[in-house]
Image (cartoon, rainbow, N blue to C red; front, side, top):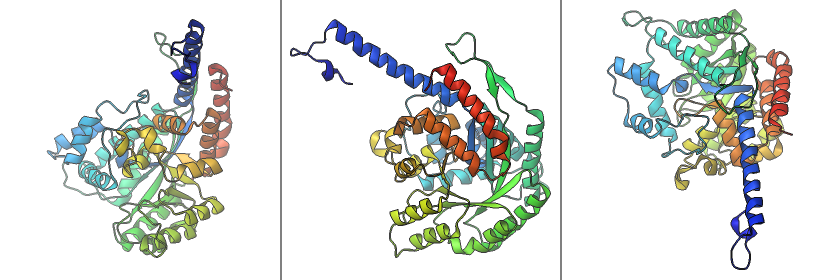
Length: 431
């Protein structure tokens, strides 16, 4: 309520009206604060996270210095702009400059040149797991494209793509072995009113990504490797993704590889609708239609689907992996509002439809290092942009469990999630 709602004929407020206004403002701030605490503490699910895109900024800068590699101006400029922005307690939700889709692929090229050995791969994977666990992520599907990296810093022997994947799986296995359920203990010197409660251990799983900028044979090699490793490590390898630069090649070139993976029992997710595809006579529309017709287990982003294809996705109930900050920045939705991510997300071309229909959807980070975000920040951004309540957030997170590619996860985690939600609601007086 604005000041004019309280004004008298001379524009002045009475003492009682000023007091009422202050109390209402304080109550609203208190409600927002309680919701922020709820989001911070709630167990989360992350279904769309690219390993290289999760690299910590300080790690990337260190790796580049070690290799005497000059990072691109896109990355360096963005680093100086956002040196203090990756903080879930930052209420501003602003990005001073956009990071377009083409910018992102330039950054990924830089990252790939720095992550060139298996020990480095091990390091960034370990750090990614730690970072997601810090934000109470209880289930994580990390995705990565297998590559042939040097086996050590001498750069004399090159490993295989299988070595790449097994390095990641060894990190996952060791991490799970060494972590258990922990207690969240607030700092006694802070004003945190949330009592000690259970923090669930993170369960990591792996999705192998096919890079659509490569050949159909490379895609088939990745799919066959995924099948082999799925048979050897079914507890960790759960799916195959088609991603990479959406302007390169066409979906039909990769269907054979994706079918090999699906027929072996692996789940499929496709990056879809990242470029304009509203013209029904265009190649982009035909590709998006083919992706929807393929009926994958999930769709990544599905940003620019025209109404016809959006309705087909809704009719088929294909879950969508929504990445708020990434979507706003790659579509440059906040460019004309001083980088305000809240206003940018309110311009999201699909989110209002998904929310209104309660369409199956997960909220993810995409590339937490590249976009300077984290799972807590993404849920808070969604809440503040669309007035999403804690009840809605609970539903979205619980639905995400059922979209997971590990079939055992819903039964393993649902009761624990519900218990923690209930404890948080009671403690924070949320109804």
